Image (cartoon, rainbow over all chains, first blue to last red; front, side, top):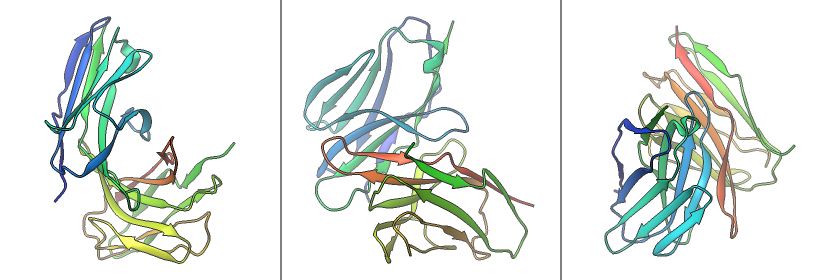
Length: 112
Length: 113
């Protein structure tokens, strides 16, 4: 059974701080990793994907992947109240069809 | 604009009734998916289809049925056998390649009367 674990939170950070969101996965065959952001009552939207060990930066977002330790994280620098949302980690094994396994998400609250 | 259209936005089901959720895409994607989301939970896969006239069960297919007669359409029927259908339902399609990602519809909130 493939599992993706996230702390449900809420994670509360002050505006301007760095928010750190973590995700662990059980399937060592996992090759593709995604972070989706979901506002309340809305559908998820992809904000980052990462495939190789190390860091990947996109604006204020940095995804970090460590396959040996089976974790992937998302850092949000200079957090803004508009970043308040649920962040879903998704993991996909290599090859075959695209069927990612989602974690239950971490709720992030950025307070002014 | 290309995208995925789900309807209705809100749906109410009476006990013993079957209801159908619509999902249409004009992105020319082969693969489509249905997910269920309960409050505070992640997305759980109900059914998926990788090609027209073919679909596979996901992790929680019991009480649901789908069809894929056209590439653009992937409707989901919630049958009376699904005893706890209240949830947020999301339809998605998949873009392959170096920028792979799931595109989601706006969702349908299903409640039981």
